[in-house]
Image (cartoon, rainbow, N blue to C red; front, side, top):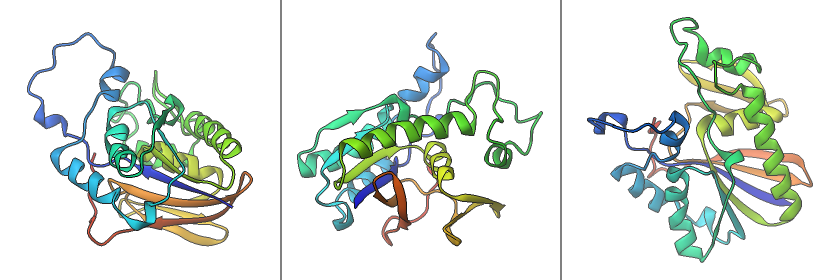
Amino acid sequence: MTTVYLIRHSIRMPNSYIETYNTEQEKLLRNEKIILSVEGEKRAELLCSKDELKDIDVLYTSNCVRTLQTAKYLMHNQGLKANIDERLDERRSGIDNTKEYPDWFERQYFDENFKTVGGESQKDVRERMREVINEILDKHEEKRIAIFSHGYAITFYLLNYCKFLGVFDDKLKYEFNGKIAFEKQINAPEVFKLTFEGKELKGLEIVEFDDIPYNMGI
């Protein structure tokens, strides 16, 4: 049995902290460079001290600063090195079309091909996430693996195995093997524990900690 901890990064620094941003860099690069907030750093350090995340064999992160900043405490505590893979990055959002599609948030979960100009669809993200995680499973069979990624990337990936039931009071509702797997807004950080036999998902649960209360973290 292989155990994968699929972890959303901690709280990022809000855009409201930036007064001016004089750059010609593309939106994607600017997004990759977003850092954790002060509270995000504290929560990341607390998370990585938990017994549940001890004895990790291998660690992967997306290509974004905020995932590596979250993971660094686990790396420090356990002498791990990061394997950075851009396929674990967040969904590329493209051009904002909120006015045209006010229901865009729910729509992207029901319609796997829905996307903005220059952005990625659920299917695009789901398939690249599955590709990289399958490679990780092949390479590290029967190990304990920590993968630090992003909210959309993780919830889209889980649609490879779960049925999406809808959004209720801003909470995503997923079903796995005929049972409710989760019904919540994703925390920052958030830990999904997945157990695999080969590439077959056998178990899915959210690991929650009383001293890391809910904060969407943007």
